[in-house]
Length: 384
Image (cartoon, rainbow, N blue to C red; front, top):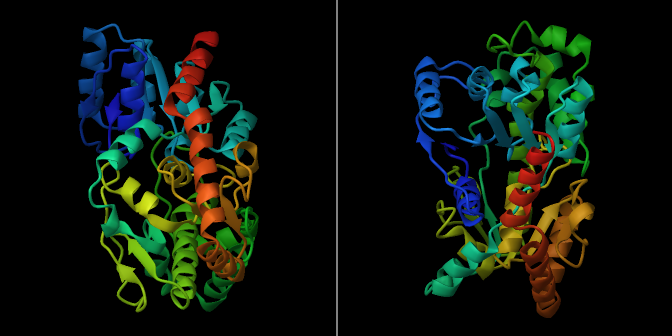
């Protein structure tokens, strides 16, 4: 298992162990997701020394796929981000791959390309771990809030750096696209708006960098790494400003919130030891899914519910596949709806508590890591 900064790798590793598997780890910085001779040497030597059943990573790494392909070892990856630019690489066609993606739209896209060893697998949560943290907690009172948000505000985005170099026409066009996206819930309209004509004009001002073997293009990279992050910033700041006019809002983040005058800034929190306390102690927890995730349910949703927290989230196309809206969690559509629903559930405590309990029971019973990993291993065995 290659360890990097993914939040959920510990839960996955622990689940493999609980299911009776032995797990060895590699921790080493990569020079590149695609090419890193020193890393390839290290992982290659480790694979040659021990007969491993698989190499596993959270998210996809082309260079690991290449090493596994050369050495005849299964490479298993499970995505927690979307889209992964690193997946748009010729290595995804290797027969050694077993790629699991949490976003069904992403799965269908790669199946349409002819990638055979890819499956849709939603994310999960370890409620046992969270229960243990919360049972031992003596300081839940420190995390009490009416409305809480945990996450980045994406104020350090590349669009702000690029915007000054763009001609007025392109600036106006991209601003209009982003405003349109902000007014649509549960669908991504940025991709079709990046027409051939717009991309041809953009090429003069935006340098596309990609590695050998990559088949990502300007449209994909610009809509995700540039416009996607800027849209997320706009949505989150606007929502927090609007809510702070009426409610006590706490923000846990590394982002700069000095311009959000009515916000209670609480700094960042540790994912494993503190974040469950925030979710349990806050009366309402917010989730804003970055528009790059087209249909899937992000990790934050599972984590809030797994901690027994009440969740108010934007709509995602896959939510009805796993949850009942209004019973397990609550979705909002736009700023006005967000404000009205926050006010309603703050005023209806018993209903709010029941929804949080329903969501917790649902993920504990049906969406835990043991069930997901068992499903993953069964798919691998059937397609080995």
